[in-house]
Image 1 (cartoon, rainbow over the protein chains, first blue to last red):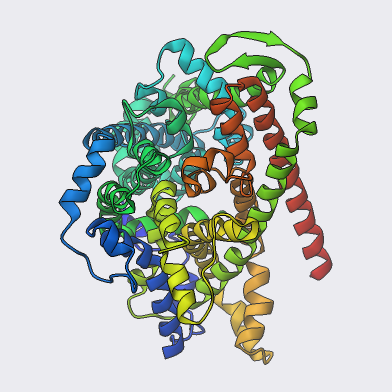
Image 2: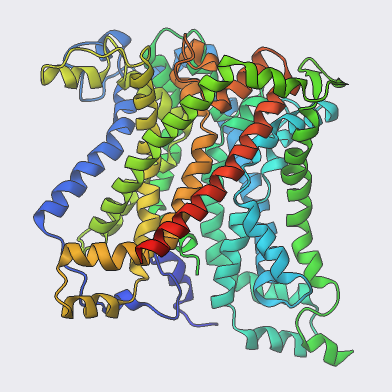
Amino acid sequence: MTGPDRPQDVRGAGTASPRRRPWRSRPRRGRAGPLTYLVLIGLTVVSVFPLYWTLIAATRSNAEINSVPPPMVPGPNLLKNIDLAYDEIDLTKAIVNSLIVSGTIAVGTVMFCTLAGFAFAKLRFRFRSVLFGLTIGTMMIPPSLGAIPLYMMMVELGWIDHLQAVVLPTLVSAFGVFFMRQYLVEALPNELLEAGWVDGASTFRVFRSVVLPIARPAMAVLGMLVFLQAWNDFFWPILALTANNPTVQVALNNLGQGYVPDRSVIMAGTFLTTVPVIAVFALLGRQIVGGIMQGAVKG
Amino acid sequence: MFKARRRPGQGSAPYLFIAPFFLVFAAFGLFPILYTAWVSLHEVDLQNPDEARWIGLENYRHLFRSEFFWKALENTFTIGVISTVPQLCMALGIAHLLNYRLRGRTFFRVAMLMPYATSVAAATLVFAGLFGRDFGMINWLLGQVGIDPVDWESGRWTSQIAISTIITWRWVGYNALIYLAGMQSIPADLYESAAIDGAGRWQQFRYVTIPSLRPTILFTIVVSTIGAIQVFGEPLLFGGVSGHLGGASRQYQTLGVLLYDEGWFNYKLGYAAAVAWTMFLIIVAAVVINTTLARRRWRNGA
């Protein structure tokens, strides 16, 4: 019951801080002219065409996509091409594995980041600013550079080719902590917390019954972003997993680096494993755009 | 007792809230990176990683004498420049367009972000086809305007341009949205007073928008630099079977690909760790240089 417009802040794209919205009443921002639309439509075509081409190539025979001029509409060969891709690698397994991995990573990351984000936003403790600075600093450290010891660790544990080898190292996100903190600083009224404490609730109780409901919209956006990143993650999964137990990206790596002669077959595999995600993305696009823009504004 | 509870953050609760994040990060983020330095001082075989043999700085001596390393470093640098500089300029322009009052603004924003939602692997496989020598769509388009087919993959510059195109395609919309967010938080009165002073649209862009975006621009430069130093998936998959070499004559092998090739194709994990740790130091240096250069430049400019 904290302002009914709160969830809008995440959904409405680019709401930097819910308190001030300088651009709402800005007279300056001009209306776009026809040229602007023309350029933007051109850019849209460039953005979308490679994905559309995946569809064309996946539904045609190799001979057809190699013809001049190239075909511009989909053909009837999708199922046959997908069948051939399955001869190379078990794509169903890859998709199921990716769903498990990305889902677990999304849920875990959102949980850990909400906990930490809340502490950094609203609790007072020693070294708070130092630890938060440290968290921001870790955003600069590329985790892929630790891949070799990580790999040795996974060999030692016998986890190579097991999904937990991919899930565990990817389970936290410094960006997520930052993102949740920014949101909760604004969205969570102190009075509500105080009221909880006065009633004698423990901090964990307050977290469960006060913080979580308010944090939900931001958690949803963060979850989508993390899911997408986990689904697309490439470097570590191709080290930790093999074709026997692949995620989608491992499977694509195998198709692309193998001796598959038919581009249409590679494209069919790409289409099958990529387009569902892109479709969901397009449906949730507004929220994801809002999340990225909100995370971008760093005071 | 009761009173203490009223003050948020008494006791150990806050530390318990942040503990999961820091524990996982320490175990799977920080520790492996630091431990990379230690591994790089050993000879470690991929097939038998338990038995590490101390060899001191031998891996580094070998690395800095290796022509493959210097070539990969050069390729990483050139691909980094070709993929980042035009991309960020374009992103700024796109953000400016998206900042107009638009019909269907959500549609355009989502459309610009579609490539970001596409995985490296998928994007590279598609573009590898589009850049094909014999039947690629790009050569076909060039043929329409009378340009002979280009063998994109085998040339040094052509392959690096192709790879940079993939990177730019994937990231330009994302960076445009970051800039757009920055532009939308610029207070309107700055523009108003500029307009009163007689500044036209371009001058407003040049003297109000750009300076106000400085922190955002620096942020994107730093992030893009870190990304560029690690470029991996695009060159690996662009090359198909010879991807782990970065092309038949290593014409587009980046440091990331070199690391993978040495570790997982030549089984030399210790040597690969030396590559990784060198990359880490380059990243630290690049970030420091970026930040100080940008600061000095802006201070002089302002």
